[in-house]
Length: 435
Ligand SMILES: CC(=O)SCCNC(=O)CCNC(=O)[C@H](O)C(C)(C)COP(=O)(O)OP(=O)(O)OC[C@H]1O[C@@H](n2cnc3c(N)ncnc32)[C@H](O)[C@@H]1OP(=O)(O)O
Ligand SMILES: O=C([O-])CC(=O)C(=O)O
Image (cartoon, rainbow, N blue to C red; front, side, top):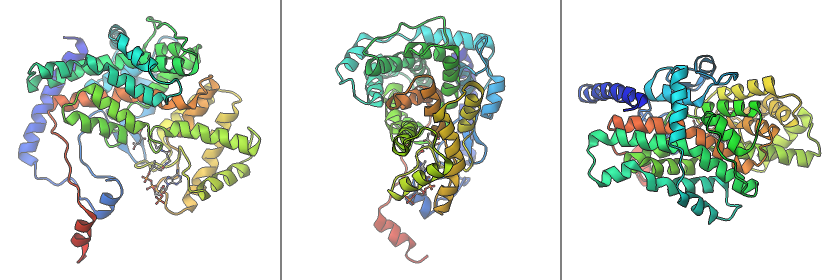
């Protein structure tokens, strides 16, 4: 058994027994209440699942196994000569709740490299699609085409014992994560660079090699990718993509089916597609105002006009957060350190000064602050990745780390099929009649 898998098995056995005992002894303890507003507005705040890998605080933002993003930047191993954390380190931490050593992350980079093989039919399936198919659609179809490789599905068909679900899920998760940079880079090159693909550089780490296969050279872009793929990885279990993966996997549908479902959630403009919408918003405002150096007054008027036309301001607001997203701040810090004189980045910073007051003035927006998606596009454009239709694929590659680590836990802990209760509006009216 590989060292990560062995560690995971030992830890998950202990927690599985603890949770079984808790369920038996304390199963009736109330952990919250649900009111009508929550039923009518997307179940905000309803505690309804266990998600080991990260937890979100409305003010502090995300913590991965208790560590904030600034702490991870201090603690996670980096590649020699680079200052940004390696996503391999975050995956290790999320899976086994330990900060890995340099040797551990090097082992994981090598292990993913060994598992990165893409079957020939995946490129055939992609080549059958029109080149202008949205990259998220291509990403999803490619993931579904890889389902032929599912060890879980194969072993289930052969009569696998319940006790081995975690093992097959671990193998599928490791294999899928390993393959994602290759299929994601393949999609980018076929969509935007005439199908001129770039051979992997197997001496690089997972994120560095992805940056290389995208065709954007330079140490700073590799560094950005390491940061980007770390900070987008997980946002507890209730966000739409994670929850979709969790729901699908609870039926014992394999990791490939589950992750593809999650990516369809991520492809929505209120969720992960917002990063493409933000850059589109910035490009359109430059076009309409006729300048790439708009004043704050011009920006404010443009934002107001957008709201008046019944549209949201992409990259602003959040279902849970009530402060600027620490992932936005992490990207702002990166841009301050590495990027000089970018009009797009300056617009992002000026919008940060302008938008919150305007959203607040509407009197209904719970969180007027920027989220993770408000910043990423402007940095990517700076390095030459200007095709914003592709941005959510980058997000998806990162999100695999969190949701697949969490899914491996779900199978190890034997979580049940998800099946909450729905009611009709008739039922609601009747229920609240005498209140
Ligand atoms: C990775 C991520 O998923 S981060 C989120 C990415 N999404 C975006 O950036 C899209 C823009 N933002 C939004 O649409 C929302 O803020 C969401 C979807 C993220 C959160 O939605 P909710 O939890 O329902 O937000 P909230 O409770 O503040 O909504 C109340 C009202 O304010 C509006 N509102 C919230 N954010 C914004 C915004 N950025 N621009 C304009 N109006 C907004 C809502 O549309 C809603 O209006 P309504 O009552 O007329 O329907
Ligand atoms: O937490 C959420 O609802 C959305 C989000 O920021 C994410 O999934 O990264």
